[in-house]
Image (cartoon, rainbow, N blue to C red; front, side, top):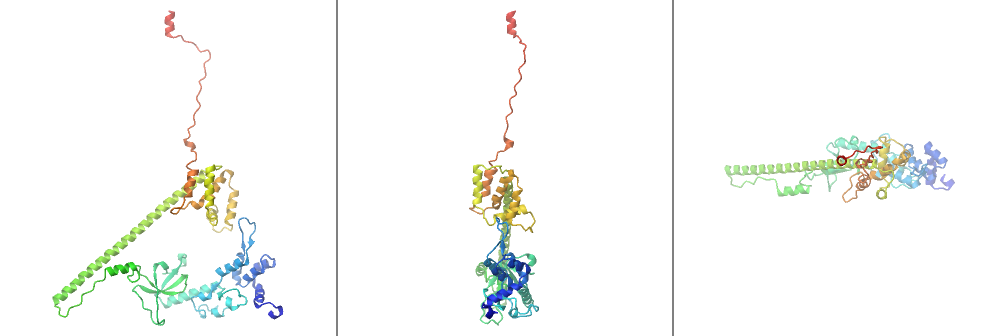
Length: 439
């Protein structure tokens, strides 16, 4: 076909691979909704991964009514980052067929880029295309190594759900890696300290790598502070016996050694108690600080709710200036995600984008509550406690919308003065003085 068509082998293989497209992608290609570049990238993947790659061809922004097609290079980058697994970094032996007898060895597997370099001419290195098989071989390799060396320390080089962690595994920060230099790789490794153990990474970066770690947090060999303390307070040793020593002198020498040993152990116990007390104090201070921050955060949440409750129907010039200042400092990439949590509730399986959820919520907001909706958009990202030397926009908004709001309950209205009606034809009473003069 190469000779008849005059096309390159990579072009012919790319066109033939289109026959492996799943119906959804094939229909989009025949309807010219995706380009040949998109189709070629998806066609050379296993069919169980094509639907996920096809979804990455599209994106719907907030102003779009329909998703628009992304460039093929975007899809290629996503496939490279999420579907390709470098066999050069695999911890297991690629020629071992026993790790997955159904799939066999990696070197003879057709589900890798190195099996057909003409089809994957743009892919660097030999990449595995079957993530399920790859991860299954990794787990089988780890199980085999741990069973062969029961004393191996299992290291989780990254966080994941505790239910997914291997039993007995520890985080990388709980141990100290010891660099080992061996002149003879076949010889048994010499442990540099009493707490040194062989370990293997069971998750995260450098998966499957074997290393030597020190499990003692206060190791006098690898901890500089503990080494300094050990040098300042060495372990007492019994003085050597002189050539001519009586039984009484030997007993005194032994008693002196036992006294020094008892004082040393007592001092070590005191230091251990001090470290324990210091650790407990640090834990108590940490817990107190966490409780304090929780109370502050609770107060800031209440302040945020008061601001929304006191939102006026229209902003004054000062309030509008405060509102615009908060907008200027928002993170345009994350602020919608934070606000959407309020409107979406506990439904984590909604299919709408954050922009669609906010637009739908805005359509149901009454006119008199539009300013409250605007303040929620602007201030949600400032409810958390600000960092040191960081401006507190929530406090500024509180001063503008809550502290200056008129308190109707304190305004005393003056009651109108009651006017007494005048009496018609009032009877005039003569005063006693006038009566006396008349008499």
